[in-house]
Length: 253
Image 1 (spheres, helix red, strand yellow):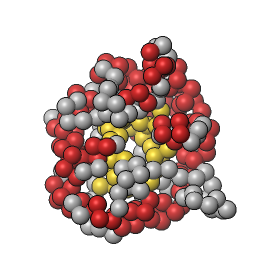
Image 2: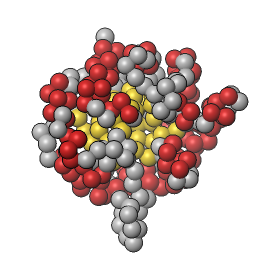
Image 3: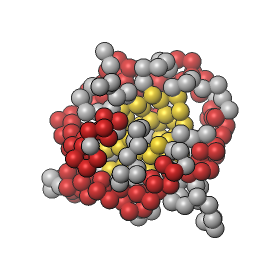
């Protein structure tokens, strides 16, 4: 079986305007070619602009969210078809900020993922527990509930990405231990295998997100069942994101 390619995703969240693309050339010129997949998830307003730049072949674009239907009277929303048209290949769904702030449920995440796959986008489905669940040793039960509802056989595509993001770690400079991360990723892998078969496991990448930085990235990226990272604040500056990309590159050796 061919090894799953590592992937690193930079989620800009609600940050970035046209003027902030000035140093993006630095990223394009220095990122390693072919060995890993690199994805940038800018605000939707910048997708088309980034699409027009001379990006490396292994750098792709992602939306940060999408609506669950293709079109209609949904003022302020953006559809998967619109993201695809603007140049996106991926879309982040079920991020903890969407689940917590906007009360999005796993059922809604599933509906959005189905629409994304229908429109030719690869879902990046986020799961993760809050601090209270972590402290009560309920991490795996929370993850299991989210996966059971968020996924079905129509969503399991050859490039599906699942991101484990413990809510308590995001932006806190705290992370689970490498052993804890490996335990959760192994659990997700087994869950996928039991429900959808070995083929699904072989083609589904399971990545980690939550306060990844230059000091802990190599340990995290080198874990057996960690196929990459979902990066927030550290992806906003090209130099910082490039440093994490190079650390991931080194984790392959």
